[in-house]
Length: 111
Image 1 (cartoon, helix red, strand yellow):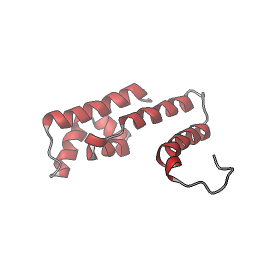
Image 2 (cartoon, rainbow, N blue to C red):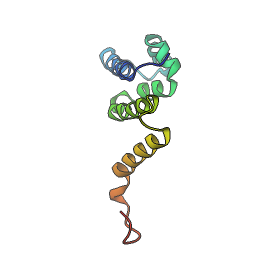
Image 3 (cartoon, one colour):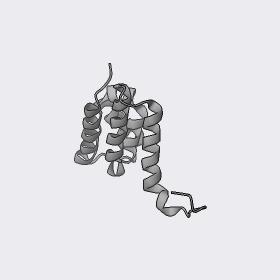
Image 4 (tube, one colour):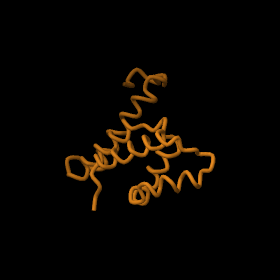
């Protein structure tokens, strides 16, 4: 069963709020990880990389990027976009955000 994008975002937000509200201590990472895993085991099992990204740095987790990626995922799932087109779109957005303004042009024909 596929988890709707809204549920993924909701779970991420709930984890972040819980970490802040409970003032969880990361110094004992094993205990910290287990406590959060116990809070949402299905999410942690289905999305282990995302789970770890959230709990490792909840203060700086890029929620907007997650929403962007989930939008592209949904477009691919519904057939509105191919995986290749989604990848190109996200790659172009990241290029524009992180690289385009910082790279010198090499020819007059570069965009």
